[in-house]
Amino acid sequence: SAPLIEQDPEIYECIQLEMARQYRGLEMIASENLTSRAVMECLGSALTNKYAEGEVGSRYYGGTEYVDVVEKLAKERALAAFGLNPEEWGVNVQPYSGSPANMAVYVGLLRPHDRIMGLHLPCGGHLTHGFYTPSKKISATSIFFESMPYHTDAEGTIDYAEMEKTAAVYRPSMIVIGASAYPKDFDYERVRKLCDDVNCYMFCDMAHAAGLIAGGVLKSPFETCDIVTTTTHKSLRGPRSGMIYYRKIARDGKPTDFESRINQAVFPGLQGGPHMHQIAAIATQMKEVATPEWKQYAAQVQSNCKALAAALIEKGHVLVGNGTENHVILWNLRQFELSGNKVEKLLDKISISTNKNTIPGDKNALTPSGVRLGTPSLTTRGLKEEDMRTVANFLDRAVKIGVEIQKTTGKLVKDFIAALPANEELKALRVEVE
Ligand code: PLP
Image (cartoon, rainbow, N blue to C red; front, side, top):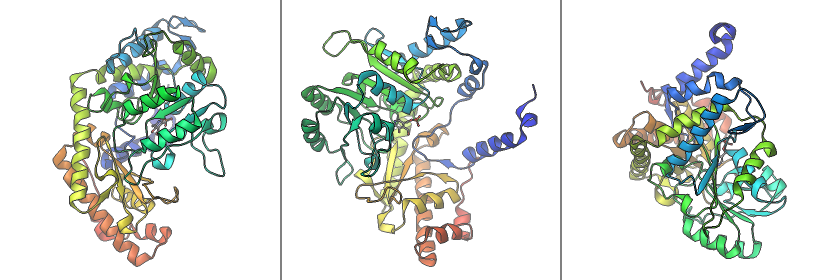
């Protein structure tokens, strides 16, 4: 059949433009990365045509001899990437993405309306960790299960003492550890002890930090947790997808029934046919994650993030937690009286992609006073610590120009955004990476 450029020139053009956008500027959204050619080849392959409901070796469709090999390799490599013993841990590689993976954990291990506790979304947690507002249950997790958040303190560190107090009263069936916007590592041991005290499951959603955990630069949740999920497209740099790791042998040495409960929850509980092209891409990526080069990448992501944080602090910027331990920086913009919304727009104009984010003390999640920055993509492109100082200069100058524009336009977001393209100094800052 005809190539895309002939079959659908409009979509072809959008793809070309998006590719140029990704490579022209600086991609600093902490949850994004740039996948390899090999991963892209898997995603655009004949595997996208194949139905394979079921498990390796027991499918509801014929013609699965090759996709069985693919899924078996994906599972073996996904375990190897985190140094897990296949006797002790199993993995399901079929979740379509991170959110369905988390839902499958709740469906598999809990009963409807069982209680969970997760980090509050404005404190850096993810929607799927049980988010609701006083007027509305937002996430399906809070609709079909009961949830009670724990929070971060004024410095942006998880308030473990509050978590303990709440859990003692709320008696959750599961505590979720993990975050989407949290520049620190977690105290897994302390949460484990709490889960033992209240007799509940300990579930880690390591989606954000998984690449750094695999690279050995952050603590591993596998020693303490009963169940671990991840996306595969953030710091792991693979395809958009999700995985669920479950203990086959509990920490007390007894066998669990997690394997059948998780597999059942994924299919037929929540999903139909697995996306075999994604699963092939997971296999390919996990092969890369198991190499010594990956350890270097993970260490560089962290080191770049620390260098960027130090350079920003040197210029007088305020960061939540006064720095970073991982790949994320939460940039506090309150001193400039510029909202995260405005700074996100401003940085877009100079081809730096970031996202607005709540920081401790924010009252309104729609106009947060922070911006989240991340280094996984820049590191994939080969940037090093000294480049982070240049990036910090761009960020610093852009915000200071933003303060000037704010003075001349007043406080309206609309006027502020309209004034951006007209600002000559801002135009001159535009980042173009070869
Ligand atoms: N878990 C965490 C911690 C995340 O940050 C995200 C995505 O941002 C997800 C889960 C959900 O992943 P997905 O967007 O693939 O559904």
